[in-house]
Image (cartoon, rainbow, N blue to C red; front, side, top):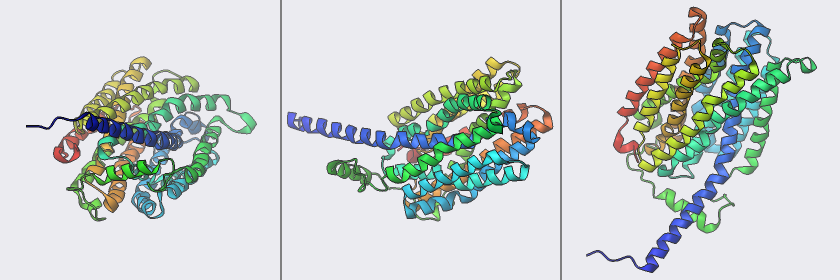
Length: 438
């Protein structure tokens, strides 16, 4: 016979639940908007080259292959230094290392305004990748120290909103800078674009050092009881089946699968981010400002779907199908867009579907590592998966540029990447349900 719950016990449960909600509300508002803003500035500095391309290639006499290789070399530097950067972060603390990352990438991005030759463009893009390496995996690792597994997909979605927001706001902003500042004080619009959009990263990098707590104990915005409750919640996380040794980061098949799944994410993300302005121009739009405004539409839908999918994945404690369905939508959008390249409206609609799909899957993908990794293995494993994934970043810039020069069309590249998204669906379904759906 079950024991009835007394009014006193019911009141205690209500008070505990209220205190828990208040704790995570306070944590979310303190950490996530700031990280979202940092990711916004990082991604803006990474992809503004897509809009700069509209003026830069003609001004410097670069081909699409030169542009694609330069844009892609960012990922070579990023891949090489991803794991070392995250291991350093684990040693020296998040606020020092993330501050260093942001200040150096801001400076290097700004220096792109002085590029004159392909060689200079290649070197700066490679160094920008080296500078930024470790930011995304570092933040993802940092969040595992503040939010339990069951809350993480929604939290990562809120953080990763910075990515579509950078294009939603940055597209029109960049288009305006290209148009309004062109010729001012002897500088062309694309030069002003790199110089002005580098400043937020440098300022935010300095703020990181003073704003970010390294540990729960140093989080003075929480009171003593809240810090104890948070440490208790995190200590209750199940470590069953979680790998913790450094070598596990490189030998666990799930890490490789995770990297390949995120490779598909980046294929879709960067194919759209780096090439959307050019695709819209090829559909018949010539004004840089109008192109910038149109690039905002796919990213507005991406923001909504990222939040909806992240919340749904946490609510139902399901990860695999919350990756598969968005991937299938991206595949459809990429492939179908090639049949309507002459229509601006249909092109924007289909690429909006593609962009929303890949954005929706992203936070769910990055909720997976903490379900099977912890400690040093988590630091190295998240970074190693990012390194594998960023091969997709290189492919989506260089390969698309090469294919466009070779075929004078984007169709072959977009269809190829669409089918690779379908392969990503199979990889997601191969992840063990009993582990990833924690």
